[in-house]
Length: 221
Image (cartoon, rainbow, N blue to C red; front, side, top):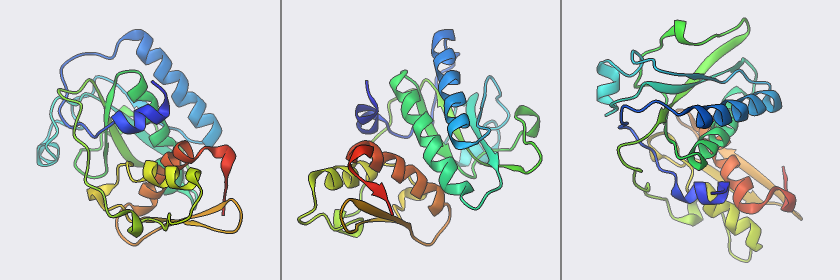
């Protein structure tokens, strides 16, 4: 499975079976996390066999069950913090999907267990991503009309493909508050709307757009 297939196959999963992540899968996942951390200057960390974060009232409110593994999206406090953890977090999510793992972005319905991960000086925790083997593979989310995301009339195929991939990106409360605009030549402008977590959502959507469109076909505005 490649990332394009992962975009289509991956859906948010909130209920997990009690099965540890096997050694080879974990080795590959850790290697990819390290690669993303180096590229993005981040401090994303896997947290394994830690039941407290998703063991309380908040997690039950969010309809989570069986979550013992998650990714702590820690990074330096920079102006582009939200977009960056969204972009690289989703790259890890899609890679996890290729390894047979399931995931779910989680912004609020969990308990912070500060002893489970490291936050160095000048860093902060953004959100977490539930991780493991799901009871199901999840369900597709509903999409806005494509014209609310971008104008693809007369657009090159790569742009239309990028927009369609972005529409499959997970967003907070499925709000899909992002827009893509094809500018002169092969430049693309991506914008976040107003609301909670929209900048993280924009980073996730830009990750999907790049995969769908092909990074070789355009430049970000």
